[in-house]
Image (cartoon, rainbow, N blue to C red; front, side, top):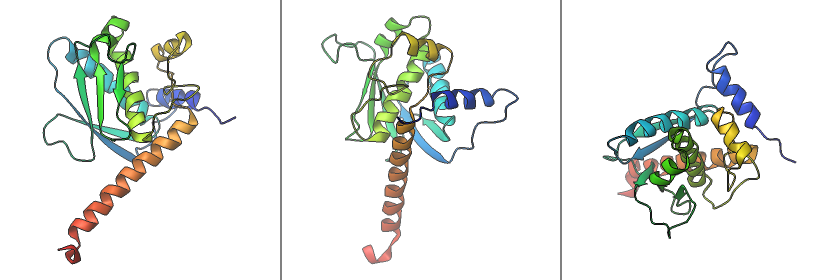
Amino acid sequence: MPMRISGVVAMLAMAGTGAWGRLPEPSRQLTLCMENLTGSAVQIVQEARSIASGIFAAIGVKIRWQGPFNCPSEAIYLSWSRESSATVLPGALAYAMPYEGRHIIVFLDRVKDMAPFASGRLLGYTLAHEITHILEGVVRHSDSGIMKARWELHDRYLMRQGRLGFAAEDVNLLYRGLDERQSGLAGLAASASDPRKE
């Protein structure tokens, strides 16, 4: 049975705020471009960004958040749906397009309905889940942790405590996905600067 690291992720998260030390230095980066919002959703999204950033920081990945303009080609693009039709993916809080590799759509109204007093926290974990789908590049779920198909009562309890983490296989897959994105970009840059290509 593969080792689960959700407890390790929780300890690392605590280490960043206590006497245990600091979070690991980010060895990988990811840019995420997000559609702008107004009104009461702004505060929810700010909290969610902080939570998602912390989840990834605990495994050494830094998220760079950016607005919708001048979004780099390697970035993941996040859109909001505020009036979701009940017939579109019923019960889903969001969906990603892992084979396309770029877009996430979040049903913000459903997130707020499901957790009216903890929308920011639920949204942060939802973002982490969908970002990981994009990075893994496949439609798959894990038996435990952030990448479970459905979060149960115990998962939500861990989420409230900031202790729901990734299963080890998900960390490995998202690292591989990030590394492939970076090597693809490096190859494009080298090709663009090679005078023999002109």
